[in-house]
Amino acid sequence: MIGCKSKSISAPEKTDTATVKSMTVDARTEKVDALKKLAPFGLEDMQKLMPKQVDGAKQSNFNYSMQWGYASATADFNKTKALGTTVQLYDCAGEEGSIYFTSNFYDKLSETKQDSVEYSKVVDLLDGKAIETYNKQVNYSTLTYMVNDRVLVVMQGKKMKPEELKAIAQKLNLKLS
Image (tube, rainbow, N blue to C red):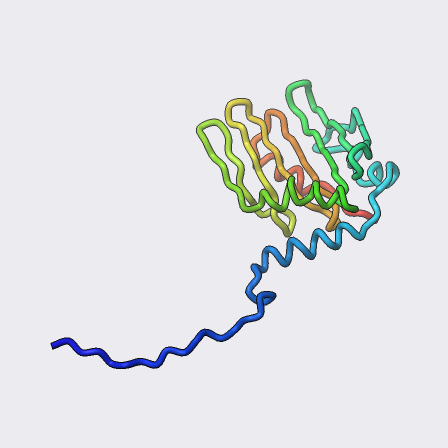
């Protein structure tokens, strides 16, 4: 004989939707709102932030742009034609800068990709998160990370393994004074 005990079932408590929200969404919204309130950097700020030398190689081909509504700067640091680093800085301040931050960094922090030639994953770097990509066929590494709570740094290493590029990134001083 099978018996059942009667249990009283109460309705779930009503919860406030704000407390149910994912912490990631809240953190993302807070970060984007903070970036929107900042004024974009100008040429002088980006020049100060860009290193003059990386891993023993001097800066060349400095370029600055405000074309899309946010400041960006790029410079090459080549030891030889085949070996070198490119540093790109994107000021994520203002409306357009915050959109760039979201689509090119924050939303990609949850992605991991890998195939026989290339991978992309999230790694720890400089007390934060970074997106590391590596193409095994051409020995090409990329690191994307934030500094100064507003500047997205994209470092590209030609003929460089990810560990080598990370070591270079850890030596850079991209802090604003």
